[in-house]
Image (tube, rainbow, N blue to C red; front, top):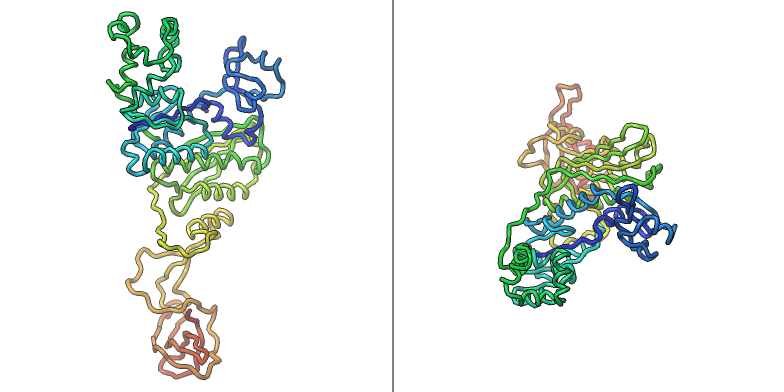
Length: 468
């Protein structure tokens, strides 16, 4: 089992339903010329009403009037197919879109990383369900056999010894042969592909086009024509158009969640992250509204990206109703996961600092959250600030974790000096001269404090901080 085929029989409809906040409603995609409009695809709810692909719109309306009709968009289907190919790229560097309604990927090398076929199949299915695509999944020794077997089977793995038997059981009409060839073979009394395998090659070559023997050799692995492999794009762009104008930010949350989820899948396939992306809200009679979102570090978690985007959306007031939402990400740096302890003792609901920082910035604004770094000043009250220097000293002095806003007289009369004095003289250039001798003391209650007095004196002492 070197190749897996992902058959997508409902791709056009799934591309619409996954962005629909009401996927349970009966929906039909309409295509064809104006004189003969027909149903290109139907949702499960519409199929339950008796609607079928290829049915005329007039016949469907005569059958039921409760379904919703929507124009079929080939671009949306192509966008969904490209998204799936990008997602599959995270499992294999050899992904091909050469087969209609399907994609194939080489999994021989992937199994060393993701496990054997049952384990890999479960993971593929789980992630496809999260993305919102119905599918059939088959593994076989070559991509052509995997594609043909996916016409009939689902979630099976066929090895080289089983291949001819599995292919031989396929019905002629599901064997991947052209319709006219399958019809001619059926009229000759052939029902299974094994009956075609038993025919002399000379007979097949004489009575049918050369493509028939070529197809049979390909699925049996006797020849393997090269495939064109998919290359993921260097930027991410996805668009969701709405049937009607969305007037509230609450109505934009579902498509926003879908777009950030797609962005996360795209980033995982590249083993990268995103540090800046934009949300573009299209309006009918107003210029598009653009929200630029910047992160302090690369991120790719879908939940984090959605929370940040939602918080930014809640802070603005859109000037008009929205007809479409577009997400564009171009700055895609490498993603370095934050290291974690093997035995993490944090509560399960605890949020990592990096995610908390980004959520605070998104909710409070970029200017409301700052980092704290050392300043080039010996005075303790001025030694920290909002800017981080490029280089830190190799050895930092011992300082208390809690520094008081301003020193206060030390009320303790009984204490033990543990360290000191440490003399600090600084600030003569700005008129706030400080000349102090600092000591680390232990009070009668066992607390460690940081106190100072005038240089060369033994009191009175001022309390400036507490050690943990």
